[in-house]
Length: 402
Image (cartoon, rainbow, N blue to C red):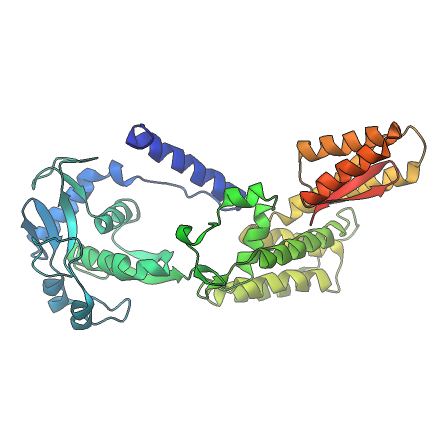
């Protein structure tokens, strides 16, 4: 905020908006509620006070720290990550110089500060610890028992370990049944990081002309508990496979007469459900999509199944297939007409709308009409340099990114 001379909440709103934009492009449905930590300070103070009252925390120089050793006397502190507290103590250093802590593994529930965003509390001016925010918000909106808690594998320790400790100290009983940790997206040289060079973002995918749902398709073909290696070649392969999948769905005629074959529908739907019930085996679930396309049944059954399965996979197959089908219809109509003066059709093979590419294709057409073939070739070469491949058809052009 200081760097950009903005109010802190302006920065918050900017990145919140960017996040929503990116999630929409990736086909991620919004949650029913998105509470902010800064909107739950009163609740977090109440939770901290109750943990203090239970004897699992202490006040030190205006800050409040969770007493890990006291908690470990009643529960097992490192059970989520399989770590032993004595081993953790041996490998933990007090890097930030928090001399007010009784024990290096103790963590802040409330941190004293005179700078930045801060709030009043019974212990002085400060802000909540990183871990108490999550527990406080979760218990406020989801109750005292969670079924599933998700997060990246790097949150397993210390963040989720500390969430469990403070939540059980507050509640007096088990808090969460299942912890689902997603492994990292890696490059060929290791974990992706900003310091290593080009950092993958949804915006970068857009800039490079990728359909962002092809990245979703790429991720779905791996299991969430396996590290996924990203390369542009791997993404190109995934985008190619995704486009072919859309083309195969588009080849199914929705106007075909016939009823849904319920026996086939139920069999393949159950196969898909079994894959997802098997620890969210999305790669196997995607395979079921191809089984649907190969099944010996009518198009009505296949389209009904694809629509049902894609409500889970979120690949927008039915809508994109409809666009593709319409493009093919226009291309066939243009090919059939073949007459001079008939309308000129520009078709994107992926269904993408790109006004700047359309304008260049129109300019190339005008150059050819004026018999300026050098200019026409120049425009084609410019597009090729941008990764755009043109294919001339009767009374039109189709294009795709390669």
